[in-house]
Length: 194
Image 1 (cartoon, rainbow, N blue to C red):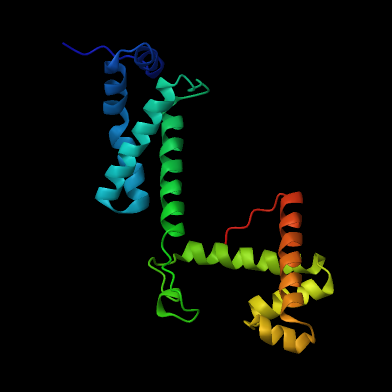
Image 2: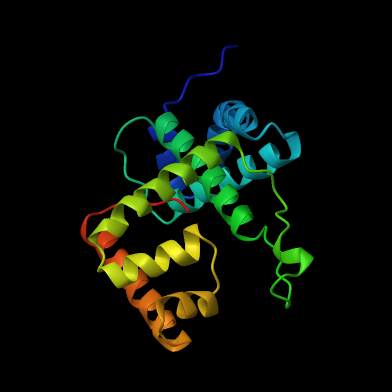
């Protein structure tokens, strides 16, 4: 006997009302699609399995908390959740991949524990180019200090010596330059991925 097809929204209603079979049916219906999507991105079976489980955990929590809004197809929504879970994973893993050393020139300050992808390099180059263009909007002293520090790799002592100011003045100018750059970025809704 052929099993009756139950629409996604009906399974969601069942799950919201406490019938766990609604969640089981949704899981069985979409597991392979979600897993395959994540595996194509990660190319790692174990990681794809973990992130797939995280996706369903998040989906079922949203449904159970009754904050899920029916605004289209469930399949599109769950794939969007899966996509966001993958992005969150990579953001967190990148933030946690640097090992810091107490010494300024220590070996661990130079080692990255992940390989930067071609896409990462392109995004970083584009963002750095945007920042370079934004420097034109800063006062000359602030623009100069950022160029000397970040593009010429000078220390604050070297900058202070070359500009005939104290180290504290150089540091202050850098601080104000960063504050002004942030203000420009926020006011103009510019997204920088550095």
